[in-house]
Image 1: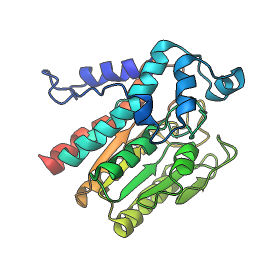
Image 2: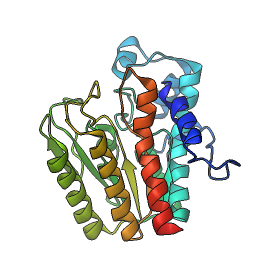
Image 3: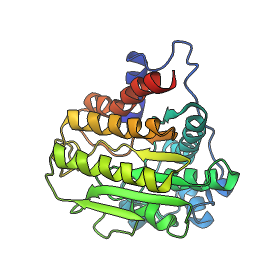
Image 4: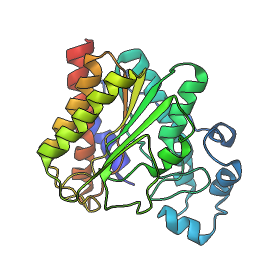
Length: 285
């Protein structure tokens, strides 16, 4: 959990956050009523009250704490705020988000509330977007997102993930691409960027919600792909550039990343922010 604070510190140290913090925004905590747009109100109540049974918490994989619940009810609003800022500015980055394993009435894989589904449905309901692409490049399939949005025709879900990895019972996204274990940079980048190019041309979305998971890295403890650090850099820059060239706003979330070296993990999650800074200056200055 320390990666979130470390990523913020790294963003400040790297100069991505303005000295007056004029480009830094903080979301408010959401209510159960608002989050019920995507989740069962009874489940949300039990989350807040620490009333889930032990099996449910084992499936989530995190111990309950008041601080964890506050973060859980705040982060989805951060993804929505990031999307709103992207619609205004072209590109915006969330320093958290990507909790794509959360389902309607249960959590899984370190995810309790699904920020991508919540942000997407909120944008549609508010009229800020009519067509959304969720482009998920976390190494694990976005099963919760797929399940929550299966009857939402104006939100297209695409998951490009390692097939033989968690979750072992996959859901059906609008487009799923399961990759072989130990795939290397060249075929991976071809798959990601060609898929995105095709989807952008066909769907012409009002915004892309991009899960820039860095657990595809070859040394990630939960990854099973062989993507280099440079491969992640090329992926993120390619995704952002493809959207910018079509004037399609893109909001990014950090997704998964697992490493015993927490400082290195923060740097890995910082790849997307660095790419966003460079491409934003080049395309939206």
